[in-house]
Amino acid sequence: MKTPYNEQAKELIVSAIADFQILEIKYRSGTNAVVSTREIQPLALYFEQNYWMVVAFCRLRRAHREFRLDRMEAVSKVDDFFPPHQFKLSGFYR
Image (cartoon, rainbow, N blue to C red):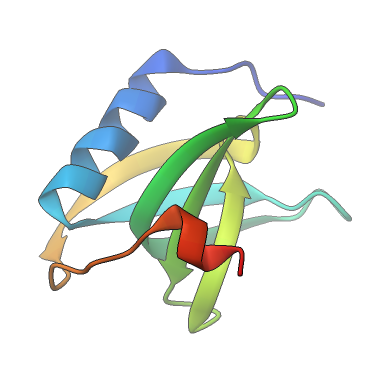
């Protein structure tokens, strides 16, 4: 089951990236469709192969991860912020 693209969620993510604000997402995995709740530090948003992708530091996994926007069942801002950074998407793929 594919969740339809959500313009509001995209705008919320862009705002959180600009403000260095933590997001809570309910994310459906691609392999077994299990939904997990995660707090992420969103770093970048990009479009590739028909999908919007978010690069973020996942607090649950304690690592950088990529999340597809269409697999996010819910997105909300948390009243918490992370330190400003110099993240560059080009450096993520080296």
